[in-house]
Amino acid sequence: MIFHASIPAHDPKHVAHVLAELWEGFAAPFSPFPDAWMAVAGDDRGSIIEVYPSDKVITPGGGHEETDSYGAQTLARPQYSAFHMAVATKLSADEVIAIGEREGWRAVRCTRGDNFFHVIEFWIENSTMLEFLTPDMQAEYLAFATPENFKAMAAATA
Image 1 (spheres, rainbow, N blue to C red):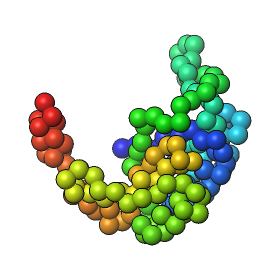
Image 2 (tube, rainbow, N blue to C red):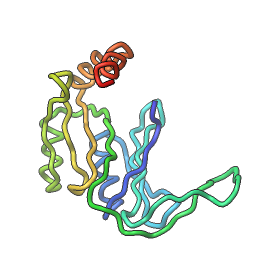
Image 3 (cartoon, rainbow, N blue to C red):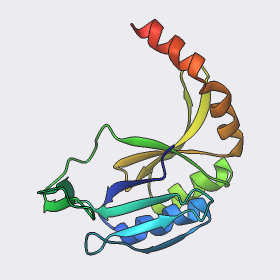
């Protein structure tokens, strides 16, 4: 289970507010970087997405610290990466897509696999992809995402 994740953004405050809207949660400033924000789902798992300035990277710390054991550097990043994650929302597909359209960000309903389940590809700042799953999509995903199905997929790939 994933409790929190971090993503880069050119405008972390704005992105955190949009993510919070999609979760019906709230946004707040967040460390370890100046100008970092977090979107808080307000669920029983403590789910958050930390949103860091896009030119900041997390680097390993120098020792065995018991607090934050990472440092920070400033680097340019590519527009796209292999990162993505699937995130639940209580909103409808139309509401999620409308938020993407309002922001000028790509938001499109997609089918995964051989009609295994559906997601809404929601491209934060048209750079970082999150898959939002409405309640109906979450049910499809959970019906598909069983250990048996993943083992069968791995066997077919091998």
